[in-house]
Image (cartoon, helix red, strand yellow):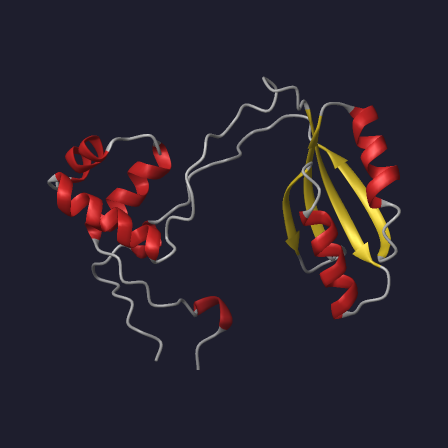
Length: 176
């Protein structure tokens, strides 16, 4: 029997697919010709592979990653939230409320002392206080909140590591 941590879905990507994904994570503005040159394909097969990776959900979207400070979002807060009365409905309502707030740039349901960890970006402490008091604390399913203010951003918006998908000595077979 496989342990949960050992279970990995079968992902059918070859070395060229992985090179395409890595290249696009580094620079999503590459032209098809530039991408094809980087991965060692001619443009037509490269474009077909990119379209397949998009269709199959490996590539979700393309967007510019903005510099937070340059656009005036100088404060990042990591908020730990506990749900008041644990229920599926309360958790779902909280998820929907948080997802609707543009200041929330990431939200994760977690195990441990908190139920959710939320990453919030705002202009300053006063803006966070307003968001907290007018939008978050008024939610009826909130039990407890702890705010952690980022002092320095060491790493964010990094490319996903894909080395676990490389084929070779360790070939991942289908689970079924």
